[in-house]
Length: 287
Image 1: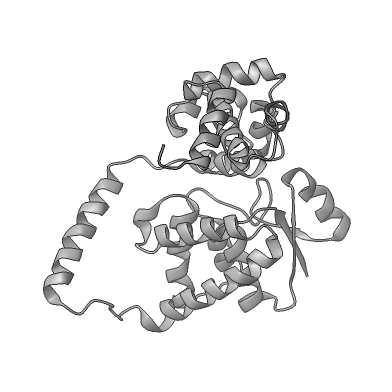
Image 2: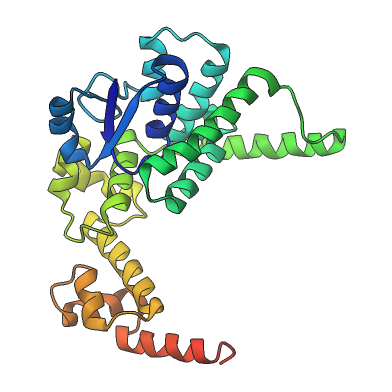
């Protein structure tokens, strides 16, 4: 059976293929595509879409797609039940659900950064999920630290961390999905619009506009996108491989003067001055 979802997977879109391969369909084939192509290609190839809005295999309320697969196929394995809490916590930023959730998110984000080919990423991730399943089935009572005083300090620390987490409002699923879409597309789609992303997360653009700053560094949608574009420009200047006019084009500014004005607003220096300082620092790091 063919299964299809959107590209650049991190949590659910890696955990679900692992689950399908290991417990549902060993011969499964997975296809990763840009979100706007998934529905059309699913119909064309007879593939089952998952972990995208508006399909059967997706999020429901506070549950993620991994949870739905367990329920749909009646997988009552206790190891999978333990994993479900970890996957859900990592995928929805509800790290209080399982102490391992933040670690799984960190590992997944790092792997997605290191591996640009989605199928290679899935292959590497399956090793991680195999290990997590083994731990969930056989090793949950194993402890790394044996010193009772050290354990006491760790318990106090973990209680403090838990209280801090409980005091924060978690980012809603649509905002996390939106953040992933922006991060996934910012390198290739510098004209990303609020209307574009609202359609992808299936949330009205007016609502996103009104609540965006609450979840994105107290910035409006436009300011947040400009911030990411300037961060990309800084990296390109640091590489030394492009002229400033090329960097303005690559970061989606209408012209170099517009680029200069926005860059100076965010950094306090013009791109030309910033570039000179970078070159001077490279020549003499002690200056």
